[in-house]
Image 1 (spheres, rainbow, N blue to C red):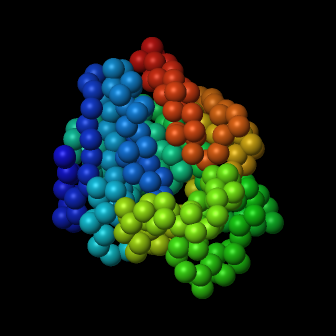
Image 2 (cartoon, rainbow, N blue to C red):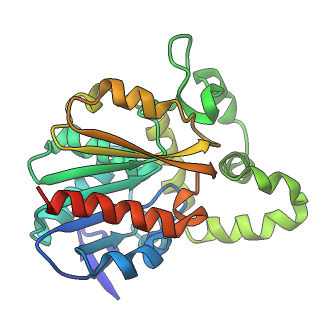
Length: 277
């Protein structure tokens, strides 16, 4: 087991596998962990050095729970890992909240250390309004909904999120669903989850998309669950560099685990295209 010690003394669990001139850093989503990438890494490590780690308050980093971390905090953590491990030629991959970390990293540190970016099923702005309908819950979550959620217990909020991400969970009786969802939450620090959830929802990262200066790929679920597949076209219209989208048909937000072979194959293709440049 390896831990990276941050400047503030917090320790993040990480795994470093493979070798090569290129590096891929793969960041998980909210309430998830590095485990989601274990299977893909077994293949991808033949192409590149693979770094996977747990964000503060998640998985092996559950004890890294001081204060009220924000998305900017996670971007700072990522920068410390990049500099502390002397990483270069980086493909930066973020799924869900991990993609939010990518946006914040680009805003704070630019793209100088990066070779390319892969965003997986994430909107640049979660709160929907009259002019923006590509946010959370396929355009059906607003500032007013967020304000109403402040009065709900945390398990209920997480259950709503989980069912929206994986619609088939609706068919499971509540008393049967509660145990696995509770186990998922037990693997995280609740205060960190709450803080990051608020931070994500309050951000508008749309301007950051135009500031990306390296090739960008967008992996998305269709028909989707949390987010609209129409985001793929929105990114196409606003990305100013080389762009490609990869569709995962009949897929939920959990595209990494819904189709692990396809996910691995598509990441491998992106890595290969970068090495050919």
